[in-house]
Amino acid sequence: MEIKQVINEGKTALGIELGSTRIKAVLLDITAGYKPIAAGSHDWENRLEDGLWTYRLDDVWTGLQTSFRNLSSDVKKQYGVNLITVGAVGISAMMHGYLVFDKDGRQLAQFRTWRNTTTEKATVVLTDKFKFNIPLRWSIAHLYQAMLNKEDHVKDINFITTLAGYVHWKLTGKKVIGIGDASGMFPVDSDSLNYDSAMLDQFSALVSPYNFNWKIKDILPKVLAAGEDAGVLTDEGALLLAPGGSLNAKQSSIPLCPPEGDAGTGMIATNSITERTGNISAGTSIFAMIVMEKNLSRVYPEIDIVATPAGKSVAMVHGNNCTSDIDAWVRLFREIADLSQPVKMSKPAFYDALYFKSLEAEGDCGGLLAYNFFSGEPLAGVDEGRPLFARLADSNFTLANFMRTILFSALGTLKLGIDILEKEQVRIDSLLGHGGFFKTKEVGQRFMAAAFNAPVSVMDDSSNQGLSAEGGAWGIALLAAFLLQNKNEKLSLEKFLAEKVFVRLASVKLEPNPDDVKSFNIFMDRFSAGLKIEKSAIENLTRR
Image (cartoon, rainbow, N blue to C red):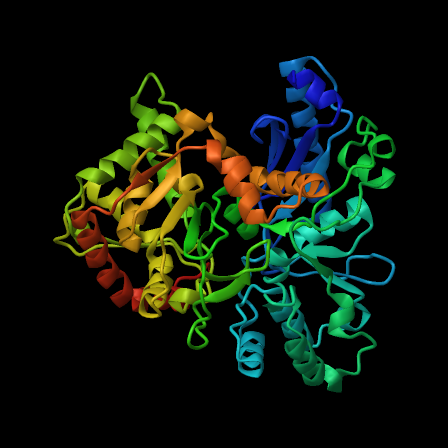
């Protein structure tokens, strides 16, 4: 079919993902390989307000509307038609955090994102009670910490959800959530595809002395697996996406798939949802997701147990910080370079030049040390951020050594968790990387393979027309397409991805270089030993 006809007839799937620095909208042609045919985006940033990392909900809607408007403009520019309908919609966003509302839908407290690490007391109690690791950023940790803090709003809670669940609710009127996103709110059961009932009862008993008029099972969103009906776009929802009324919800009865978190869409976008497969997302934050064959032997505070969008159990190693410190140093170097160069290099070329310089470094990085902690890192045992660079007087302070140190530091916290999975003999057949860390060809991929001491693949953009750049927005659009597929032909999500989508896509695989593995291990010895320096900086380096 001609793309114009595909668009006019709504044979498309729209995916929108609210990432930490960008909101991205992608439109897929579901008749020809599920590849993107148009895109739009909007840049945004979290705010540090009253000591908490947050986004204002007005900014959520401004960003969504701008992304959709830019997508519609892209459709018009490329194909000469107006985007008035789509076949299905999917909403994704950063997992975890705390969004609570009263019975009238009023927001009760500031949106607390995944980046906040202020819930230590709650996580200690809940992990001990459940015998299941509850990380600092999980929604249930934020809720219980608000109780421990005696925050007045808690008594009025009628609904708690994630950012994706919130947007989906406003677009459809449905208080539902995909099981992958749900698994970052409260522990889920992969057999029942629902919240763990025993833990719900344990939590209810724990908080019963507060005598609130709500029960935890009643304020959480309903859990849905991939392919299940999650409602349709309402007239009000259509106007929230397209305030001018260009999107006709009534005419098309546009269905939405269950809203998912960015971890789940990363699994979809990398076809990492079967046992012994995994993916690594390396952007503002960094995490590795490994689909397990069996449960771990015990509880590890460093390892989150979440779920694929189909409900399979996943070991998640999560670091709050990855590329922010790299970006900060590159901006500084760019300022210096711009002083001396009459012709400025493009931003991508400048990044590439610095990344490739790291390949010239000495095996021990010249004895340099760095921590990229803009915010706290539970894996490393630090609850605040202090980006830090250190060296001895006789360290070999060269640009190559510095860049390798900075790039290695972005992987340091991830490696601490990976070592645990190795001891648990979690088997991995394939890993696929995505995110800004991999944008420079080969370098990020090569260093990640060294960290895992395992082969790492990335999407081959030369063959796939830049598909990896669409990331999670493409992943949630595929889940929307799977919803449509399920109405005509019943396939498992695994088969849908393997037989309908990835069968046509190419990737580039890189085996670990033994010298890189040795170099990274030397750096990690220094990184682990130097954590005392980082903790001292938190205690002593403050604004006066």
